[in-house]
Length: 232
Image (tube, rainbow, N blue to C red; front, side, top):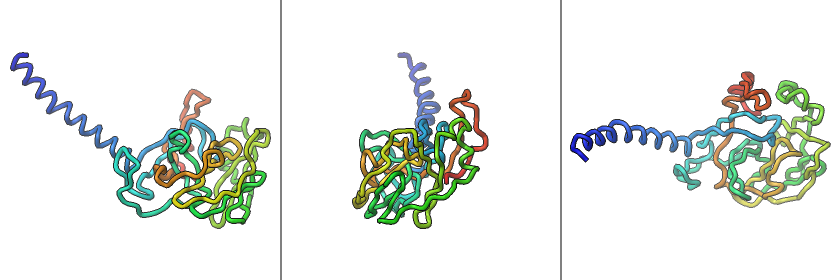
């Protein structure tokens, strides 16, 4: 190779390849340990999160991790009951979005779709129409909607009477440093009822709002009303 070509390659490396590589590393490290987004392809968290939502994930909500790993550098808080979190499934490593219904030490059970925490049944009230209306009109008659209250924490849930599902289980004692996860779409969610409590180290971060949303059944048309919507 001629000296001219060598000089040109060095300039390309210095002025183009290295700066681009640096930016890519910084951005991926940021997404790995500080903040990220998560596409939602399934309806296991309906009516809170619906198919086509892209949710914001705060990876600094509970701790700081080494980028590209699950190693914790520092922790300043623990997940709370009612938090919507992103985590890796203990069954197959798939990244999932569910709600925490049981924290370490809790006794969790369910009888006919009624959640019971530490021997206290949850209360159920009518769900706000503004949340129910996020579900397409053609789907609504198939489901039952409610606001589930456990102590001072309240969130939406949905049931589908015509679907076969695990509506009763437990009681299960949540082990130390583990969390019991369930989807708000109670009759259509693969969650801790099937793969057990989730270790703290597998939790990626807390989901707090919808960044953007598209209707996957209507040519991916933007659902503007859901942009930047806070998650209940």
